[in-house]
Image (cartoon, rainbow, N blue to C red; front, side, top):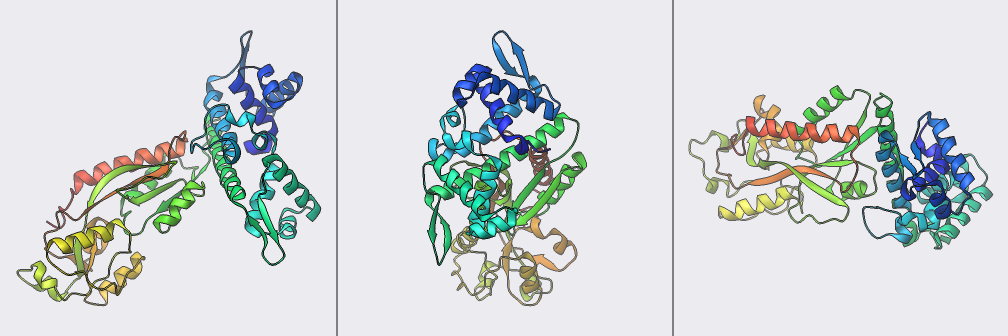
Length: 414
């Protein structure tokens, strides 16, 4: 049974962990000490786990549960962020003084998350199988606990999130994600592999690194559920911040600075000019950049590292930048355009190894030693890694090291 199903008991246990005693938790949560004791016992009975070591000096999480309680406490701290915390990484006792974090139940959070999507109490009630008045009451309680209006109401547009409401939604999503990761750790303690990882990928920058790493991950943890989605940089970053995905793999931005997120370099990737096999330029005995003066290109998407490298390379060899006639964000479309025309593209040979080996496309023999970009990972900072995430990160690093030793930067286009 997921930890979120024991939300009330779990919150009490986290308060005990933070304060060191049932008395301290009772004072923090404004409960009786006997109520705190019963809550902890109920949680231990439901999970069939001993959560605390008891002594005359108080209560301390068992070695197995110390990290789990820390992780669960972080989850509750995310609920406090809209009202009590500004840090992107929640820590400490702050959430214990937040009425929203200490008062909401799972039903409240389900109502809030549903209303953010539907914008309608009636639709949310139908989806949850409760009355509209029950949804209305839950929303009133949510706004009372937060001390802020979470939605604006209008006849034409229904319910629309306020700024505070949007912050509360993000906190709820991070709360859900943190507890889901705690479930994964708890399963591992019980000798089971469980959990789910959602990986976001950026176009034209993953290549063989992620497939190899995912295969290694699933060999090590066959019970893990893995989902891979693609998208634009801005869209995936927003999903990562909202805990809708767990990791981004792709080309890193050199000016990266996003609160709550961190980058990790895997390898430096060289780009080259590629064309279809049999392209007139590929048949020239002595090819120089000057021969590309009138070439038509399939250009990288704007505001991407590949576009930056493309512009810098053409400027360095004295070629004018082409008009932005054609830009493509799909690997399949890019391949089709190259194969069916005389257009060129600046791509990573690592990303199209299969097509090169199959004789479909070729790398033109042009100097591009400075045409490089950094491939790596983006994830939420300050997180406690789950077994699945830890294994995936190790696999990505190992695969990147192997790829670099097998095929150094620009070896394929030297």
